[in-house]
Image (cartoon, rainbow, N blue to C red; front, top):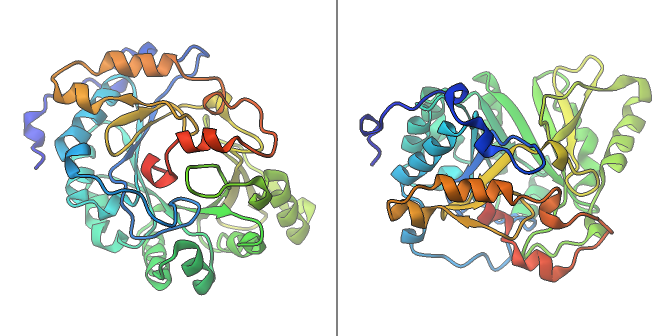
Length: 348
């Protein structure tokens, strides 16, 4: 169990040695994505192999207090935002307690979830000051969503999306777009932004272990935007000003309350402004989503060692682009993909 009283106050980010999280390309890393678990109550085929992933003893994974201590260290080094991911973060036992504890740190705290258990954790989100929630949803058609996720929780997810909107959370819906699967629903998702402040994020299909990736199944940035502009008319869809380090190219339809964007990790990577660090549920640091290399932080933490030096070494060793995959040719060597984890084991 977490006991926040045992932790000494830490200095706010502006007093931290910010230069320690700057890589050799001058990119400052102030956004930490922490996976709470590799487990998920869905089986989306682009995220998890059909056979699932091997279950490991809980001793391999960060305990609650270790999640807090690693997060606390990164905040001391200058991290300003932490996003909790999984697997599905809310299936972890004690997720609400972890969320409340992390809410005591001087950071913006956010959550990415499949939405199934949001209603059970809404009080913890409020208590921790969480205002931004991303919900992964790949179809607005019940049977199609069930086919993609290999489970049917459609009504529950939609009910919880409405609840988040009614509670005035800043809501993004993440949609992995795949050719011949759900690429005919682009306009349907954009229509969700007509009357409510919903922010749709269309995500290009990315290569990970076990997801049978091939770009023939992908839909690129230009193709998505062209389809949406064709439907609404060229002058009705305008590019929006993005925030610094924004991963999506954002747009709005004239008169609509929300927005949509495309995360073009494959066709138009945003590596030159990347500020993200990832911690897997078993305490490994990944300095790039596409990188197969990892830095173990959990073992030295348990040994009572300072984890700042390995953090700094990992940041400095970061490649300029896509974990060293500098050129996209339409295919990626399967051996290279298989060296990386499945998406469910990395954290979204």
